[in-house]
Image 1 (cartoon, rainbow, N blue to C red):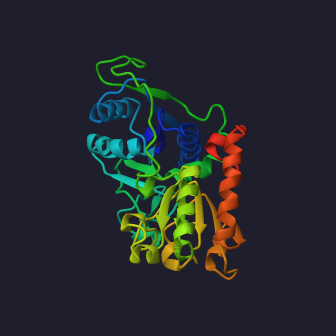
Image 2 (image 1 turned 180 degrees about the horizontal axis):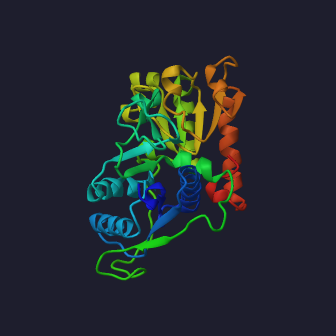
Image 3 (image 1 turned 90 degrees about the vertical axis):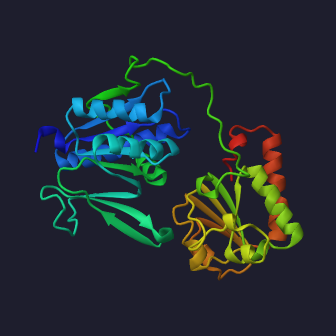
Length: 334
């Protein structure tokens, strides 16, 4: 084993709106693993140019080889990370594991093909988040994974890494340009429309259950979602009754979501539904039944009638926005 085969490399994101948190999480996670392996942490950083993804992968693979092949490369599980990972894996002669939520160092892989030195096990959710799969690479393979946003942000919120955490930072650009050069200028990053984006990628979600099926209540749910710039989600009964389309269904046979804010309105919290939002950040719930299971999964809950709550909530948010208070455009108070 060469000296660098205990190293860990992280691929820093320079575009995502959460890049500061994601990059901090990448550095902290990479530092934890490299220390456990007895190696160093290094970083790749995409420069200002915008070459095709295959060129980025080619350049990144060349840089990795030039510095000595590391044991592990970690990318953030963003759209760009998922796009780049398979190209980079192909160029490096390995395979990519996407969407891991945990990396266990020193764990036995349960297979004769696991590394005989310090084992690394990658954990990722499967079956709609109901099960976890543990994966190990064969000995001698470059290990390349994308790590879930929620896991990186959670790691980042624990604190700041030491100033000398990263040994080397290499600029990744296209082969024909110098680091920091430009082939295309990035003018702006346009966020997806919260009303039409796939709920898997929604940053905020308002989930409606049968308690919100009344015509007037449902109209207010829509209005609240618009004020919060939140996507609309649904329980199975709401889909079965034709109130919302199937692509909005959250749960075991629907979609698994990981929003920053999950507002559960008029839903009981069945195991089928709860399975779909276990990766959510802050969960708030409103239900008339104080024994509703949803309260056991919520960070805060209110036993109340939506007919009473929604009009007041809409008025408060509207007043807050109109007052122009600091941060009101992001609705931090919710």
